Amino acid sequence: MRSQEQELRQWVQRLADDPANAGNPLLPELLGLAEKHGKLLRQFRKIAKISDRLQTETKEMAREQRQFVLMVGHEFRTPLAIIDSASQMLELEPKLPASAVPRVVKIRNAVQRMLHLIGRCLTDERLGPGTARRSAAVDLSALLRCVAGEVGSGSAVHRIELAGAERPVPVPGDRDLLAVVFSNLLENAVKYSPNGGTVRLTLAVADGQATVQVADDGIGVNAADAARLFDKYFRASNAAGTTGAGLGLHLARCIVDSHGGTIAVASEPARGSVFTVRLPTAAQAVQAAGAETAEVPA
Image 1 (cartoon, rainbow, N blue to C red):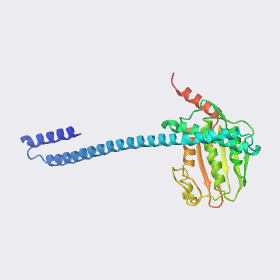
Image 2 (cartoon, one colour; image 1 turned 180 degrees about the horizontal axis):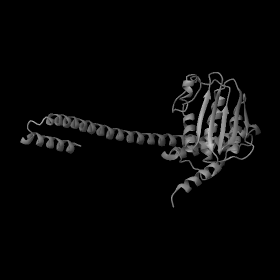
Image 3 (cartoon, rainbow, N blue to C red; image 1 turned 135 degrees about the vertical axis):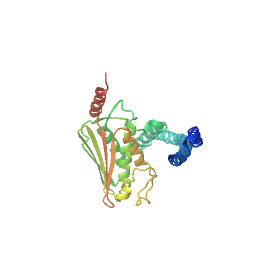
Image 4 (cartoon, rainbow, N blue to C red; image 1 turned 45 degrees about the horizontal axis):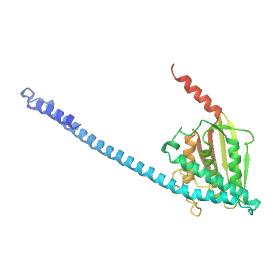
């Protein structure tokens, strides 16, 4: 840009020095336009420098974030491995009450799910749109029955009602990541219904989409908070007395997005919340892939 500005100045100067242009009424106007053009070029040069600096800073921030995630992931692996080892020892304990065995199994399953998720999340592109592993079909019905059983067994004052999961519903995706979505939603429904009650988990299939709803009669949130529930680190204004980091719903949205689905919430204070997850079924995914192949010119 600097060379362009110099060339423009030289060209204008030659015009001004040319005796043939003496008294030309257009020359002052041309000089003014050239000066404005020069100012624009200087502004563009400043903007380019700022853009380069921002790109450099963004890359540095991304690098530091990756290092932090790697460090946190590494630190999480050790205590989780200790918990898993202790759980295995409990399973071998001959005096372990029979009623405690399902709880130990639940602990081990949760640990394995967390370890698996950490391994997946450490790859930057793992949760990017369209990059979830979809090579195998996941039976969404079986997954919901499993998650409902695990979460339901952990609460004595809540009842989880599951409807619509009698028949297999195959969806393309990563079973472990999808389990995190529905575990988070069910655990939140239980956590934010402090007086107990029923959490309703329903599955329906229509028009090539599987729709899962998690409804509770808990504390709910206002409209302003509902609009931000999926933001990273955001917590509703009425959740101050409940433990949480504001990451569960954000992670759920990332996973659902990576599976080509959508997640939404409808909620009112003191009247509970309804979370709706929509995922393409395996049949719909095959149909969409076939349509894309047909559009490719031979």
